[in-house]
Each structure stands twice: as C-alpha cells, then as structure tokens.
Length: 508
Image (cartoon, rainbow, N blue to C red; front, side):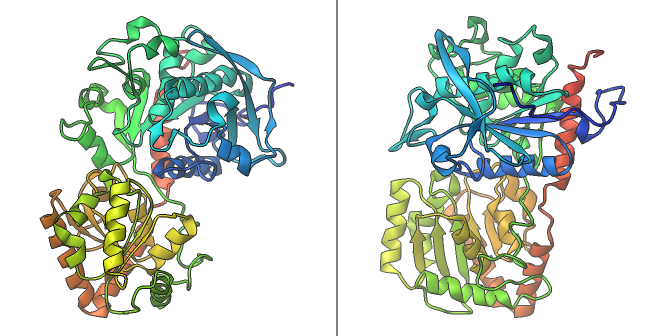
C-alpha cells in the first residue's frame, strides 16, 4: 500500500531570511502525545493537546497528531484503516512490526494517526491497570516514538516541527538527535517538547537504556542520568530545540529548587529556550450561552439561567435547594496534587459554610473520606466518582464557586471553564491559577499550602457571596468576560516553531 500524504505542499513560497518560514502554511506540526481527546483521556493532557492542534489547523497550519492505538480507541473506532504497509521498527534488540491507521472517509483536520501494535497497546489501560503501571511502559512508548519518526519522511513534504508532549513522547527529540542523526530529512526537523506535568518524568532503571536502543553515552548527568536512574523527560529537555510548559508562572516555578521536581537545573540550563505558554479552552464547547448540556443557557448580559442550573444541580445530587447558600464544585482527579488534604485534615470541609459537590475519581483514601462525609451530611455534600463531560458542564453551570486548592497546578483548565460559566474559583496562587485568576475580581486566591490559608479564602468567598446580589453579579460578569481562547498562545507557539526550525534550515 502506498503512503497517503499527511501534509500537503505549501501554497506560498518561504521568504523569511532568518527561519525559512513566514506563515503557518509554510511549516507542518506533528504532535506526538499519549492521550488525545476524545480518543483517550486520563487528565488535562488530552484536552490541551487537542486544543492547540485544533486551533493550529483552523489557522491554516498542516497538523498531524500521532497517538498509540489503545484498545479503547479500537473499540470506539472499529472502522480504522491502514494508510501504509506495515513496517518494522527496531527497539533495542527487538524488532517489532507496526502499522499506521486513521479514520476512513473525509479528511479530518487536524489529522489523527494511530500507531498500531496490538502486543503493546491492545490492553485494558493506557499506562497500567489496577493501580499498577505496565512494566514495559518505556519500551511501549519508545516504539510509539520511533514508529512516528520513522514514517515521517514518507508522509511530510514541508519543514516539520515534531512537537512532543510529556515524558511519553520525550524520547522523540532524543531519537532525532541520536539514532536518526545524519539523515538529512531528520536533521532538518525541529523538536519542541511541552512539559504538562513535570511530576511525571518516566524514571527508569539504567538497564532500560539498552532496551530502548540508546547509546551508553547518553547516560550522563548532563544528558539523561538522574541520581542513578534514566530520566526520559530530562532527555527530552536536553535534546529538544525548545521546551515549553503550560503557564508563565509554572515556567518560573520549574526553575526553582522547590518547584522543579529535581529538574530545576535542566530548566535553568535551557535559558530562553524554555518558556511558559498558557493553555486555552475551546470557547465554542465551553459557552453557557449556547451549551446544550445544561438546564438553561445564560450569558454576561442575562444571568438568569444560572439560578435554574443551580436548582437542577442540587436536585441531581439530592442536596437541599437553598438558592442563597453558596454551592461549591470541584471537578478533578482525587489525588494529592489537587489539595484534598487541606479540606480533609482538621475537619475543614465539615465545618465550612456551603454545599459541596466533588466530581472525579482517584486515590481510594480520598474517595472513601469524601464519601464518609457525604453520608453524614447528605443535604450539603455529594461525591460522584463517575466523571463525564456532560456532568462537568452541569456542575460548572450550576456551581457558584469552584474549589482548586492545588498543591501545584502547571496550568489548569477547570478554572478557565468555571469563570466562563460564572463559577468563581477559590484557588491557591500557583502555576496557571496565578496567571488566570485575579484575586477579589474573578476569584479568591491564597498562598500558603495550609488549611488555615484555605479557610481564610473560603471565608472571603462566602462573605462576598452573602453581600449584595449586584456585587456578586459583577464578579460573575468580570470572570465571564475573560478571554481564555487559544489565539494568543497559538501565536507564541508559532514563534517557537519558527525559531526552532531556523537552527535546522539549510543555510543555518
């Protein structure tokens, strides 16, 4: 089977003397990502990758997304078809056969391609099952990266930026500059790595180096060695032309000893080749004025539907229908990062004023603790571990306030959606929360990671909510007026791409 071109030839002639590219159409972006909504999602990575890829494609940039063909994708999309003959990929001492599949029929934009290897990806989970990671994850994702890079020269015909996301794809820059070095077509590709969550780095035992086919010399403290372990994320940072993270404040945090997860030296070493670009949200999907999934639509000019959404939400979760009691929503993975300890330690949640709905699953200890409180206070606390996007729409439309007391939050998307729906965040001043919430205007921020600091912030929020309806409406209108779309961020990514490609242009 002949390969089907993924990326069309540019329609204009490059004229930039510095980068070789001027407009979005004159370069192509290839995203490598382990999750991509709606095919596979465990957190914000899938939605963030989809958001930037979709916006880039809408702006005229040729965009391709590579992701593994998981069992869940195969079950949801049984009509996938191969676009090339199967081919072999060497991973260490192993030689594996893979195929590249896509949806048949009309061309999707961005185009999503799936790397098919049933032995590695046709499993019950994405990263693991029953709380345990798959032991061969480094080999699985090494194959994913290698297959995508191997096939790119057959599919692309314009300057290519390989945009890798998180540790699962961090091997892409490493392979480009080691295994594929010296191949002209690969040498001209630029490599950009986005760090969505530096708390996950793909740490492996040193023996994995040979298993994924990397030379021994990369196991060095200036490259991929990390306190005796092999660090895949560190390797991506070392070999990428540029790296980004998902908010300006988090970029600063990652350069500090306290906030860098041990990699602060690597982030500092990159200098101005590492920067923070804020994520965005889809303003068409998250729009209370047109949302078909909520009880009643509303807007900045007509907030009346918000009250109907609140009543519907209280009924859905069997809470007392008190219109003047503040209703908090929290939609998140129930894990340590999200600040649940602040709510549970010392009984803050039980004594706090208001109603609370928790949507999301996570660690058993948090699920059990929250359910125990909900059983004792069913009129004001509800827990729903069966997350779905329609539920999240209804929660944000009906909630007065959003809880995000995060230990750390690289960017966060929920606080952007919440403000769009007039749900005012109570959040810790970290990462993207600091960049997207204005204290006392569009939310209530606190600094210290203590229950006392959170309680003070909750008190400020309740006092504002209990004040005049007109003043609270002003908070809602101001929050709903903020622009959290992708336009400005996409422009910054384009600048990064141009700079990265400039280093690999023929006359560079």
